[in-house]
Structures are given as structure tokens and as C-alpha cells.
Length: 252
Image (spheres, rainbow, N blue to C red):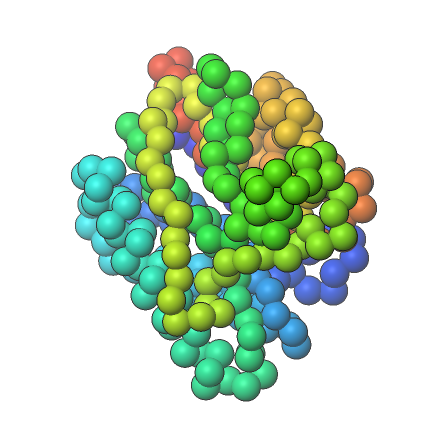
């Protein structure tokens, strides 16, 4: 398996409130995290950093995930624990009042991937069936689309497109969406903040993933595309590729 993580503050924002990482537990299993912070007075970067740091800390101390149930239970328990931590931190630090963050955390094994999701950062899957978004945005415009009040095309340019309905750290209680998918040879998972998905179409995302290039080059192309389209937001990208048999023998 190969992986790459890349983040960029974009062309407009002074600070990067996105955060993320790819870390390994004691058994060498991967946890990929993307968090897009929100909140005034730069508190967004505090929320995203705390979330990534705490989840990474928990994962580094973890032994082994053997089943999808193990992965789902671990992600739910730890994300709820981190939610409490970030929420209490904001209560104890008035300058961080109201801060929160999206989060996507993906446990990626050789046989399956389990994805936990809060907010409007996204996870896509590219495999033999094509390219598709596999997370559901917890956003106002997506709710309007779901209810049939606006079209998906209208949502792309809606004035309240950035309104998130669910975030980590903003409330004591949190609903976390969790799913497990098959992850097989040749499959690719793309995780990103809305700084990418709001600026680069799904067709463009897939086109980059199909290119004959390294994962690092592909991630750089995606970041560049978002910046070329305005770069008004921070941009974070993780690509995870399940190698096929002939690639597995190559250098990582």
C-alpha cells in the first residue's frame, strides 16, 4: 500500500486551519485523518490540531484491528472521546469559544477500510466501478438537496454552501457516521477538505488519479488545481492506494 498526505493554506487565507496525518499503530496498520477547523480568532486550527493529535496518540497506542467491527467500535469510541476533549478545551479557553472541526478518520487495512465522518470533508473511492463520493456531507446545502428543495447543481453555487450542520467539538453530544468498505488491489481512496472538493470537479479528481504519476505528484496536482481555481480556502489531501500484485514488488 502507498499513501501521501499534503496540506496547503491556499492563496487567500493567512493561516491553515486544516490538519491531518497518516499514522501507524504498533502493528503497522494505517489511520488517515483529515480535519478542517472552524472558529474565530484562529481557534479553528486549534480544534483541528487537537483532534488530529489526540486521535494519532490513541492510534499509536493501539495494538491491532482484526475485524471491521473492531475498526468501527474503535473509531466511534475514540472520536466521541476526542469530541469531549475539544469541547472541554473550548470551555476552559474563552478565546476558543465556538470552535469546532470536521473530521474524517479512515482505518485502512489490506482487506477493508473503515471510515468515520463528521462535517463536509469528503472521502472518495476510485475502483473498477468508477469514481464516487462515499461520505455524505453534513451541510445545509446537502440537506436541501436531500429534501429536493434544490438541485445538486444549484448546491455548487449556493450562497450558504459553507454552512456545516455537524462538527466535532461544538457540542457535548455528537453523531458520527461510520461505514466499512471493501478495499482491494488497485483501489484508491481520496480524502480531502472542502478546499479541494469545492474547487475541483469529480471528473477532474478522477482524471488526476488516473494519471501515470507518483502519489506525491498527484496530490500536488490536486492542490495546484484548487489554487488555480481561486484557492480561497485551505486545501488538504490524502491519497491511499492499494497496490496490485506487480506494483507491490516495487519500491514504495
